[in-house]
Amino acid sequence: MADEQNLRERFVQILLDRIRAEPYPSLAQMDLLESTVTSPDQLAEYLEALMEKVESTQFPSLTMMRRIQRIASQLPA
Image (cartoon, rainbow, N blue to C red):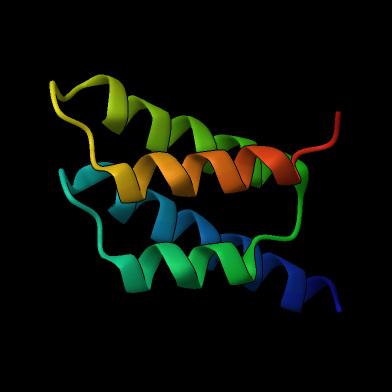
């Protein structure tokens, strides 16, 4: 079971690295990451990466901002 968890965490990290590296990340990769994330810490790290993308552009994507809003609502209070 620990191996499965390690592989899942590794996969999430690979996706997160790719999403961070791309100026306009793939919707499929973001969806895949969101369906694979298992911890609030991973979700928060992903959310931070998305917010950095929105902050770095003058005209951020409304779709990206809605995604951030949805993910932020999933974080524990």
